[in-house]
Amino acid sequence: MKIGASIWPWKWSAPYEETIVRIAKAGFKAVELIAWDRQALDEYYTPQKIKELKKLIADQGLELSEFVSTPRGQSNPDKKDRDASIDHFKRMVDVAVEFGTKLVNSVSVHPFGLDFPRITSLPASQEFRINLPAGLDWRKNYDDYVDSMKKCCAFCEKAGLKYALEPHPYRWMSNAAGMLRLIEHVGSPALGMNLDPSHLFPVGELSEMVVYQLRERIFHCHFSDNDGVTNTHWRVGRGKIHWKGVMQALKDVGFNGVVSIELEDAPGGRDEHIPGPKRPAATEEFDLENIAAMNYIKDICKQLSIKVD
Image (cartoon, rainbow, N blue to C red; front, side, top):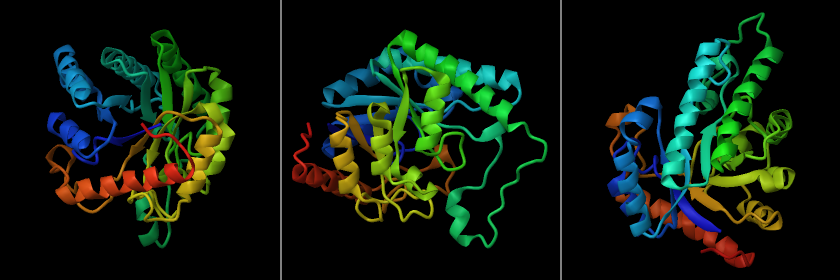
């Protein structure tokens, strides 16, 4: 098992060169890169830039654990939107192949491409309203989503990649049951979960149970903590998630991939109220938060005799 870091909490938008070095200096062994949209895929991740980043990652003693991008429109009623999302996914796969990573990641989408309120607003809401128009064909929308996922997974199978789909509240895949249902309907060995306890806990899941239910379909992990009310991303060990139970479950099912620390709401982190491209990089305090999270997981691994590279 390796412990890595998601790059976007350290620095939201590209360029990422300095942040890669910073993550390596903090003691991590893996890093994730992200393209927030199709424009970033095409304009930042050019063949030359991929070559430069790939060399830098290797020179820093890191592994690119997965390449991340979430195409919009995978469940949109308009077929043109779904086709565009599939084209976006294909481009993501091509970039991942150039990098040499074996995993791609995206977050599951909302039904019908609808806008949902952020779960972080739940504690301050007297009435948590979700606008669901009457007359929507939910069965067809799920079938459309499955069709999109089949096409995306076919790209992965052809390229020799795995697709680590990430659960999120109010999405078509938000829990273990949703993942198992999708695996059954899509029917691709390339499809599995990016285990994210901070997304699973607020929807009522115990992540250790999710691991036992999905077993070999857990491809990658995002680790952060919260209180189970919202999907805030605190330092591991600062919330209510039972991390020793999660690590024991991962050991029991033979997981030997990357646990990636993703502290989006830790002290010193980027200010989410500032628009993405203008967000400043995280401060030195954030480095310490990440190192503390890494050491917390390493200590549990030592207790459970889990080998950490």
